[in-house]
Length: 317
Ligand code: GLN
Image (cartoon, rainbow, N blue to C red; front, side):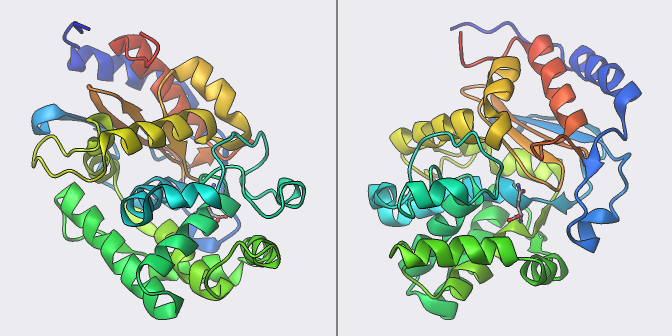
């Protein structure tokens, strides 16, 4: 399909005027102090395109807490390490439930509905930890490799895990612990729950900017291969699978509305970031801390609405 060239100057100006009256709206995540004290008036956006072209707006160079957006990279690395065996313990169906819901886990015998709700991400992380030898040592190795992947993909060695956030995640992690133990009771954990969670809390605590995130995710827009370096991160088939899961489950019980309005696979995080992927075009990372009921950035979501209007990007032709 031929795509008309986008006038980025105009597109960014329209996004800015669309979001400006709404900056600061929504509710900043307050379950840990490190997220609660983030300035609600922040807004950043970065678009990464083939060939290293990048367009940015606002606070695009400021680091924020990646939170659930990290689940996409964990999923990619896990599929690379263990392949389709993952799907024996994690489903591919949208949940229609909040991110940390436990109810479906009982009905479905400890098999989480998809890898993007917390239970599914914890199970995926558990598989990844096993792929690196298991236990706390496996968790450390998995996180080291994930961090290395991020640094390589974003071409920035300064990317790091905010250990203060990771500690707070663990201190307030009762629900995630419950999800882990509940799955363990059905035999769907391969490591001690604490080992899987120590990796889960750390990957959620990666600090990253919009510019770094858009750059790091670019392989997802180009069939699993980084278009600039040529490195194949995952196969084309698995890349398409990840995008399908993002489309159907990337925003928890807000996934249908996001798909309808934005028309691109995306993933939200309670730090206020959203990653969206326009296949064959590029990636968009947006950040604004105020969230809607489902934990998706309100202003970020508005910005994406204006971006798809300006670019005409959609996976639906
Ligand atoms: N670390 C958060 C949690 O596990 C991530 C939730 C999110 O971003 N939706 O509760």
